[in-house]
Amino acid sequence: MKITRKALLPALAALVGLLVLGCPRHETEKEKIARMKTFAQEVCRVWLEDRLKAPSTVKYVAEDTMYLGNDTYRTDGKVDAQNSFGAMIRTGYRCVAVRDESAALSWRLQELAFDSGG
Image (cartoon, rainbow, N blue to C red):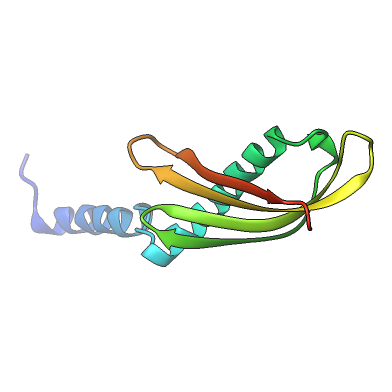
C-alpha cells in the first residue's frame, strides 16, 4: 500500500492540531508563584490549627502570603479562635513555609510565631 501525500496531509494536520491544542501549556513563573502561595497558605493553616486549643472554632480574619524567594513563602494573618476557657481570642501569626523540590507538594515549616496582641 502506497501512502500518497494527499492522504498524509489530513493526518499530519490532525496530529499537529492535537499537539498544539491538546498539550497543557507551560505556566509562567508568576502563575507558579501564585499557585504555590495558595499551597503555602493552606499548609500554614494546617500547622496553625494543629497548635490551637480549639481548632474547629478558628475563623481566619486576615491573611497575606508573599513570596520571599528560594521557594520560601511567608503568611501573616489573624485568626479568631476559642482559648482554653471558651472565649474567642484574636491572635496574629506569622508562618514561613519552604517548599521541598525533592518531593511533590512537600513543605517544611521554617517558622510559626504567634502575637497575642491581635
